[in-house]
Length: 114
Image (cartoon, rainbow, N blue to C red; front, side):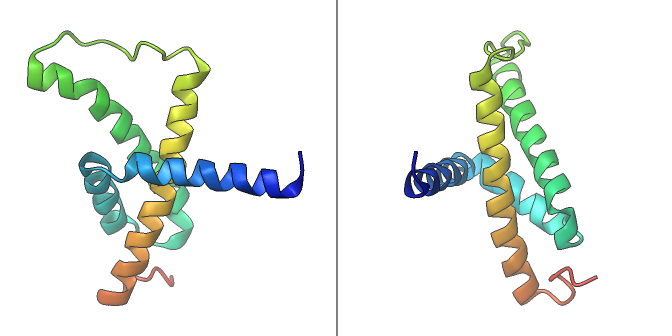
């Protein structure tokens, strides 16, 4: 595998993460996370929290909206689920960073230069 292929694979992974968050649910979670983010150095923890909220919402929406039985994700013990969680995490890091940057442009003290 050459360097260009590695770069293409990494960029594809980042795009997949961005697109996973780029829906109503993900954007609302990312917006709240960006508003709560106190400084750039906390982005990793806040993105992890946003990812967990997203995964929990995915489980609870059918329970609340459709009165379905509570169930754990069907692929919880499989690598595909954890890859999805990692893709979401990367997506949240990207989207929260963009929103936090925009917040810093428009709100005093929002840039996180603490």
